[in-house]
Image (cartoon, rainbow, N blue to C red; front, side, top):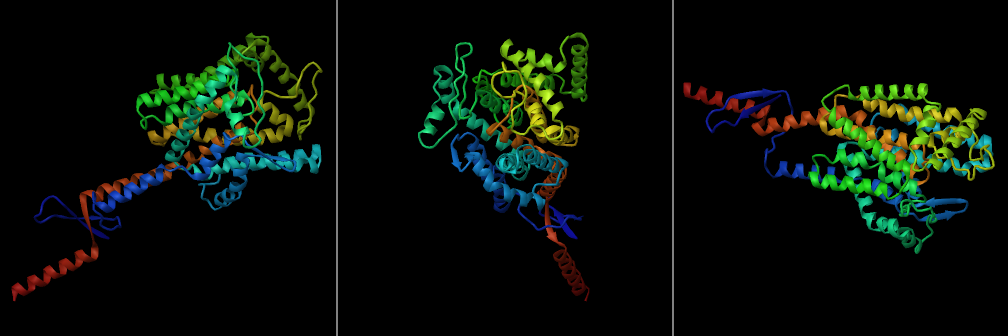
Length: 485
């Protein structure tokens, strides 16, 4: 028990009681101020493994070691994955979630499908790389992104990296010369420069990635995150400029899918802004989407998937080709539903040049069968739906939650016409893991509120140990006895 005294005046003060246990600290003194400063400094730091990983995504060096090509971010994940697994197993990443185990099952099933389809000799390398890029990226975010400040710092850091690339990417957009890959390639081996036909008189920016689609996907995925998480943290002008530069960087790719992803995010942000006071606005949006699905299903000679693929592409020829990819790719899944085709080629007409599949979700089902596809999709859905159901969060966390859900929705949208591979794949799973802390934020938020209230109480009251109060009462009583004598 602790006795407290209210500092109303220098005269006699009433004694108040509180059940809190603590020690007396000056409310505005050096100790309290120093403690708050150190807490702010600690909160302002982004974990250095995360900085290395995010920077490594944009460093296109490749180091061949035997048959394996280790890029910069893969090397960082190799060193980080074991410590992350240990910390996750010890509970340092919060409560273990179903998605954690679901992604482990996805990686395990994918490795088994590689072994069954290709043989164990040909399965070790792709299975190991898949595990490192999937679980390594995901667990790194789970361990290092643990609160709103970490999440916001990560977003701002990536946004700054994108802005730092702008002089080089704008130059590539205008001239077609990839200065980033040329500069990095003068030191070590890098990704190959991919030539693509110009669009609207401009070159399609590849940046440090191995395709313009991946560059656009990476930059475009940051649009809603930058806009919402910096609200109240940056001035209105700085926030608008930073978000605009991120969106402009995605536009430089001149790729239909990333640009459609940015428009998709803008539409959701406007919906959230206009109907911000309507609690059921997202349910209403789902209802409208379902009605639109029925209209396309009933009133069009195309399936909803075909309608979307054919109408949301940069040119009509690309749209129709993706329709054929969907047609023969889904047939491949039907013919190999359990273990898929691994990294093998898929059956298609001879006039379909190349073996790329411009649909991330379809390719996962083609390579690893329906079980692997379900492990992956259900894991990601369990995270997003659990976060979407949370309503008891403060406005700061709610902004992060809305931005995260819009970002993951954009990834699902873009992934239906684009495949994520290498750095973009690792970035996707890092982002997926970076929002899981929101499922644990209630307890920590209550503790923060309680601690904040305690500090307010200690600022208004001088906390005195109960023993000292008892001793003072005893001395007062003894003095009264002496006067009586």
